[in-house]
Length: 281
Image (cartoon, rainbow, N blue to C red; front, side, top):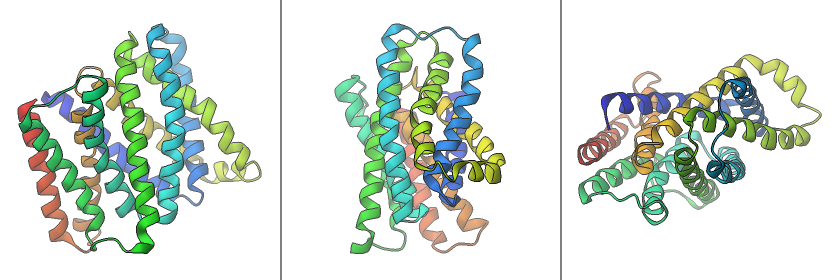
């Protein structure tokens, strides 16, 4: 991938880490996700009059992706309810590129050279290892780990749907905008119904963060979809997941958290993997 494309995906990685941290820190994580996507969907709705409709071939993928995102949000919120961000986030995001590579080969015919697969595997292992910097999981952590791996499966599913759908859309920006609108009008009313007695107060107390995170989350995934329209989905996913490394290194160097040597070693493995992958693609 070119330097520009790599830079765009790395920007998406920064943005993705930011909105996940916001969700984790929210008092009501399900309501945070619902209102956050209501904000991004509202912004996308304003763009629709200026964009052409996606081609008909893209609509089944848009519908499928909207449904798959429901599963992703449920598993993500459930994982954060049972486990720490430092465990759930690396395991969910690190497992996805390998699953996308396998599924992409079977469904989309995207194949990689042995060198590229080695690089992708190294990057994924390095990211996943960050979940276990405190040692192997104990039985009490199994539920959180199950939700994290389940989140990785849902990430794989919607990434494939959107990677294939944007290639059929005829307009990348139109596909991205319609996806955010469809997510908002299907998922958000359900969340508001569940939190019908609390959502107004929660929005009024957190509206600045919700709108900011809505913009950030939309930009993060919009950039990824845009790049996937012309590049292998697994490669884009692996590069985006460097957001995990960025987050833990910030924790080590700026917040003076523990396990700095371990994190630096894991980051080195990820960087080596990304370098191998980019060299071979």
